[in-house]
View 1 (cartoon, one colour):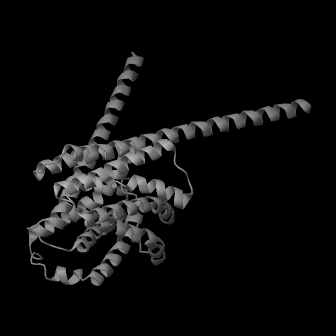
View 2 (view 1 turned 90 degrees about the vertical axis):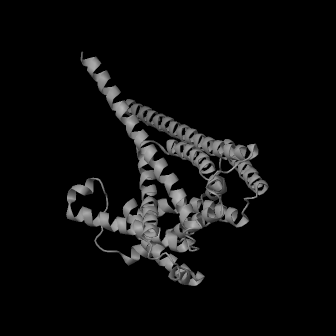
View 3 (view 1 turned 135 degrees about the vertical axis):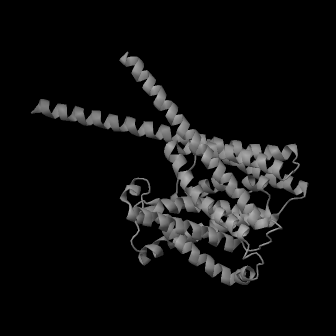
Length: 357
């Protein structure tokens, strides 16, 4: 009877875990895909007609900063929220702002080039245009950290590169080719890789708090984006925009800002309830769904080779994640064996010493 009860309890907890994973993955898909379509609408829609990508990025960073501050106030007023929102903000430390600045410069470059890429390429091609992040990860790991990559992982990168160049070629054949959009996509991929490397280092400066890092990073980003807006003349573009009093425009902007904050939070939650590998596979599957949805929504016609380029990029990305996961598992198992051998050797030495005594 007890055994049956335990089995039922295990099934129940396993079912609950699967349901939690399904819910988080679903939320991640909805937030991520919605974010892309919202940004495309704000950046390229003729009915909005606002040529100010830096301003849109600035507003999204401002929303994230406001949400972090509101969360800090909520935790300060009611300690019970501290269990769910691990953030404590008393004052903004200028020294910390300066120490976070290098990451903020990378972050601003990443989201700016990301939005500029989306402005000039279609949502259907957006994933392929930004698909070189994995390739840059391998290059930067070698250049910055001096770590070599295994041959299977390099093969996966070559598959991604084949898919990328085939996709670019097919975009040209379809008449929707945008060189500047592809250049922005490549630059966005580069800065995504740089951000991943610097985020881990910068987290140590803020007690490994993602919330506090987000606050300081977004404050720096707001300052940097304001400077860029002045230098590029976007301030006058925004000032003369004819929809500044349009409620629907600001609702769309606010929604994109909330989704911009939510994507980072949900991504961290997805990795927490699953694994980085599951997150990568989920992201690849999400990109596939996003591409299909974009082709349907915008009523586009794509060639068989165009679809094959997407397949190459997605399969290469998923395979790379799997290869790295297997390598990590092997390295972990190898280190455990070495530790056990060392403990055994030390134990034998102690035994021999005792025998001699």
